[in-house]
Image (tube, rainbow, N blue to C red; front, side, top):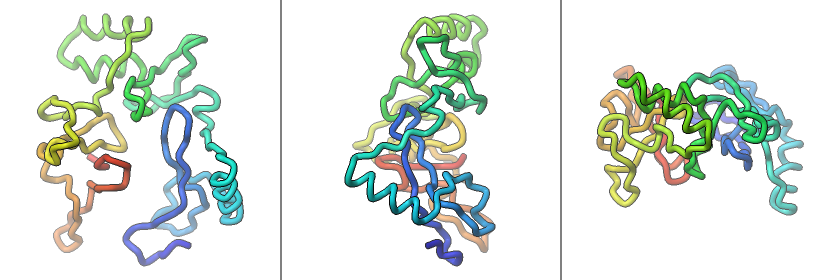
Length: 201
């Protein structure tokens, strides 16, 4: 049940066990403040049946994108085939916990913004099978990777774009606590994703 007066809405969700690793709200949402979220549209009864079967029988949820090898580029948002056996258009980051896909052109622009030749070479190499780490695995400010043992060096990953910041490098307008009287919104959350800080930059 959704508490419409609460500041957060805890709704059942399903995580795709396919390559994308995305999570989806499972049930229909009727409250106007949160109905912009596209859900799987399950009724409460369907959700109960699925969740009980999931625990008993080890059912796995696979989203349509993973089922049909059609994934969105995390940079431009357009769909592309991720089927390597029939000429992939989008390629997945090699980090097994990532789930982001990219067109080679989009990724090359992100990784080599100040070069004209390097992106072309990189695009060709990825198309030939070169593995890559996408931009969310390095801080946008200092360009260093994550160190989970040092709280300041944990990465905060944007849910909407391929940008990440170390906790110590977060821009001052990305706050862990909002303040209505000051007109500031919360844009960073701990413990929403396992072992990761979630932000909207």
